[in-house]
Length: 269
Image (cartoon, rainbow, N blue to C red; front, side, top):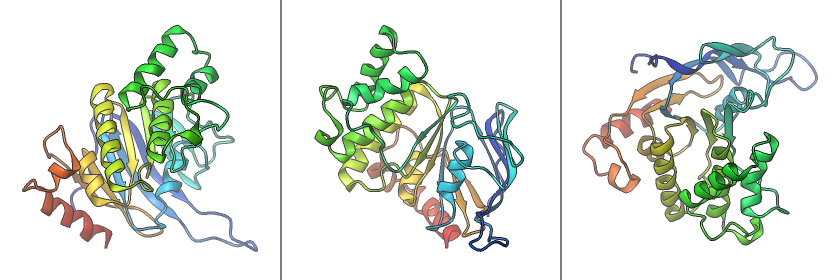
């Protein structure tokens, strides 16, 4: 196992985070996550992999403040934004944390553009500049010409693109992504990975990206965390110095890829 990585000038930090859900019939439930800790630097792309059922989605839900932790803390720019005794949650922490979930969650009665603009309406920024930014982002993720299409008229990949643009449009410094491409076919997945890398390279957002695909984790990430089976904790913090820009099909033939892949796979096992 590599030494724990403590990112300099961490933008986001998770300290000793733990979660267990209420047990049926009372009593103490088993821990889903326990002693989880890591830091993410400003502009870093962090990928997270682990066995199925290891609490990766629960981890993102706590960072996004859609779920309470049982123990531990989350810090943003050195300020504690969540702790186990917090009286209430503040989802997205004042629009500082965006969340792209496994489902696209587009509103079916709104066009693709209106779905993207909806995020701006919620923050009172649906002005001419906001609309221009929305259109620019839709073009950046390959949706130019589809602004007036409704979700049922879009493919699964297009809906994912709209969901990503909706999160990016209000410019959160941290973006959480929970297996956003997991249900897509290989070709669409490769295209969306490339689109995401292009947008990330231009905006340099801090991204925490959960995936079950080791190749995807290595192709996208500056670092990869491996989390254990429940109670989940970090068992490997692996830096990734493969040259950028990257494409998954190029990464797998790089001589540094096989040892990286085997190290991550061994940690998952």
